[in-house]
Length: 487
Image (tube, rainbow, N blue to C red; front, side, top):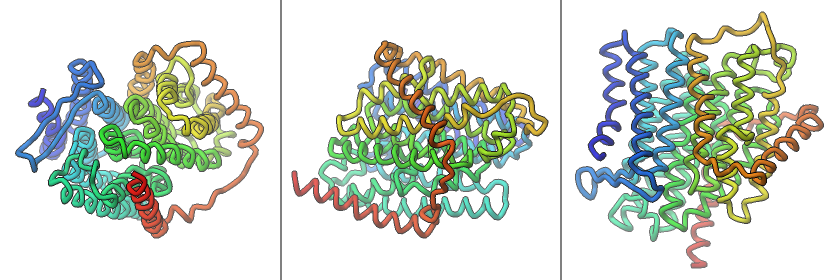
């Protein structure tokens, strides 16, 4: 299994460069890479049936690369694999160049690497390679706006990684090791620097408000990859550290709750479809972090839904919800949009239902009220999509040739993944999500559909985001020093 893992990790990077040598089969090579990752994730599930099973891999020596593969990794790897494969299908007849597929596959490989790294330096390298590939994909249209959005993403990401690197050095200074477990007993400032870097990189809480512009202004397939898989590359290490080091668990849970509520508060008032989905991504990352022990299943469900909805949003006749009320969308597309929206709202028969039930059962008492509010908010957000008019429209944008292949993979995945937690189907578990959705729909029609509130966007500006990093670092210092003083 060790040799298979190393070969699988290197495969996307090899294929990425081969694509330039054989550009005529770029799509086939990219598709092969996604399918190989799906096969590897399933192999991990079958070879490690217990959540406690871990495959540790030590490359070089004690100062080399440290990897760890388990069921948690497999869920995140499968998410990345399915999302990437769906995007390749979507782009099949779009005329995108070999450069696009090369960067998509290199980004895919970098994201995979973050899901098996268990030392801070290897993770740093993977995140930096990922950032460059993401920047090139965001800037792919080569317009002034796309280049600025890409550079903005790169600047914020690199600033965050500087903080992260400082924390990694402090961990090494304390333990002569870069292993994640080194956070236990490391100086408080080490934890503060590392957590801040990952919070920013993952688009979490107020430090993640760079995300709405980046995800909403990117092309739809790029938005699907960014929201469906890429942001989880920074969430995964936080979840892994929370499971390894008990002192990190409350920090991750706290920011999970804060992120879930913050994203909902913005998304329910947003009138732009892609910005709504971007803010929803922020909120859903909070659900992933709120219960680290079951984060993998929720990440998979969210990745399938969000990539599907972003791809659909790119094929709608408008991004404005008010305009969409007078421009019916194609009925088949509306059905796919509705299924995805039902899943993330927690409706039974779809994997979102099991993911929400499983997450709620692993919340601490102080998290319950806020996460229930966030769950209602999520259903309100997607009620805006569910109740869009549908039918035949002459203004309907022509979909990409591979659009429906992508939908079959993503929407079908929501039904198949539903079997992961079939124990969720009890009367009590079914009633609560249905009541949550009912309350949300009532609130949507009576309150939020009639409101016309535009929240200020000044906090999303680049210079403000850099300032927020500083304030967040002060908060993390205070939390860490307070915890150490009490203990």
